[in-house]
Amino acid sequence: MRQTFARLTTLLMLLFISSCNLFDGRQGDQKVARVNNKLLYTSDLIGLVPKGTNANDSISLIKRYIENWTRQQIFLTEAEKHVGERMHELNRKIDDYRNSLIIFSFESDYIANKLDTVITDHVLNEYYLKHQDEFKLRDNVVQVNFVKLPSEVTDNYIVRRLIRSDQSEDIEKLEDYCINNAALYFLDQDSWFIFADILREVPINPSNHESFLKNNKYVELSDQYYRYFLFIRDYRLEGTVSPLAFQSEKIKSIILNHRKQNLINNLRLELYLNAVKNSAVELF
Image (cartoon, rainbow, N blue to C red; front, top):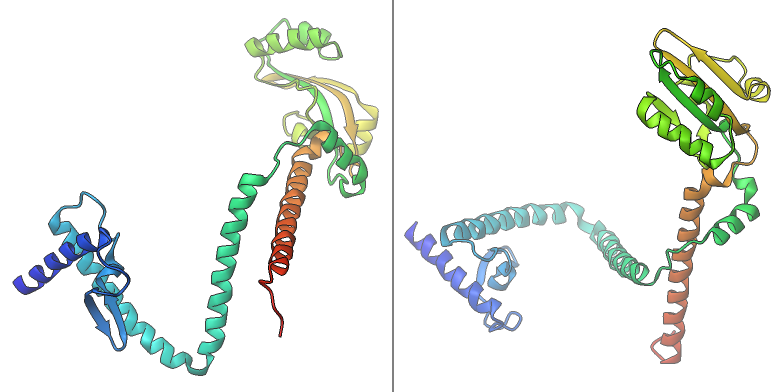
């Protein structure tokens, strides 16, 4: 036990020395463990022990690492025997995976530094107009003014008077009122909602949504607990072209992906042309 402790203490000293760059590669490096023809060196343990770790904990960390490394090498040796002739194919896959990781890391850093992430309304609208066939609605969508008032609120005539207005000052007054009185409200003049989601908030269940939207612009009804006010400002039916506002995030993502791909394609081409120009490429 004392011999093991002394050996690990020596390893700690050697690790400190090697971390000060007195070791150059394997020259002067000390062997720590061997499994068949595979060796673990002192320099392989550099960085294993965090700064400030006391001696006993440091020794435990190193001991555990050496034991785990030994067990893994034993198992790996047996696995290599089993793989046999397929080792060449596995090595090729390992190389391919390693190359992919390196390239992915390089491309990610390059994109992070070079990608223009600003997408103006003009660019957004231009893409939308050119690709409208790609944005067909899967649901009926609506723009609404919707207010849900507790039944005990008696001045609901204010909602009735303001909810159908298209004047911004009236909507601001209605919003102020709703902040103090409503259980729920939607008054955003730009947002689109899936109609089925709105219906979950209102105690009605029309059998034909398309017919309902075409024939009802304002609905007011109540149940035991609430009074509901729904004004449908606009709607688009399933299968028609989706509103731009309903697709803006998707379009932004598409545009950014296109920019990323163009960045990488241009980078690859530039590197290739430079390599050819500088005679770094030679085919035999």
